[in-house]
Length: 183
Image 1 (cartoon, rainbow, N blue to C red):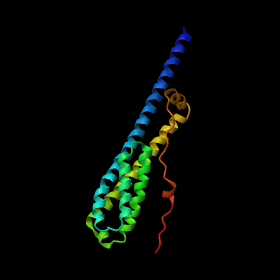
Image 2 (image 1 turned 180 degrees about the horizontal axis):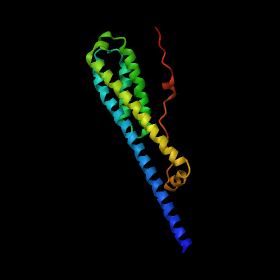
Image 3 (image 1 turned 60 degrees about the horizontal axis):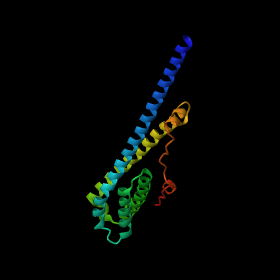
Image 4 (image 1 turned 180 degrees about the vertical axis):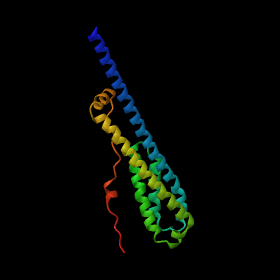
């Protein structure tokens, strides 16, 4: 009778541990999905600000056509992106295009003083901060998930559920370069 009771207790304990890890892994996956959604919301917000910025800038920068075209292409890529990787690639392209746009804008004193331009530039700056925070939160969430699915005993339950580690967002090499400042 005692071995039967111990066997039942062991089965119950293993079942409770399995349920605990199952729920934990599912919650962490949901947090990752939510964190990615927050990034996506901010990328879309930034993409929605671009047309207003472009209209403000167009009147001042008629001969800077390639810069404007690059921003437009990058925005279109964000709007078409379906996967996180496509979004990341399009976001990196847009970030580079916006850097070029703001660098060229420095040559237009009237544009730099334009209230609409300044307001849009400020909104984009705040959105960039939100994107950075959302990326950091995403990577933190992926780290927690990866720690659960790669360590014992979580690795056993993760394999049983067909779950594997997730990839963190990475900064492209060209974005790691230190900006050169000259006086």
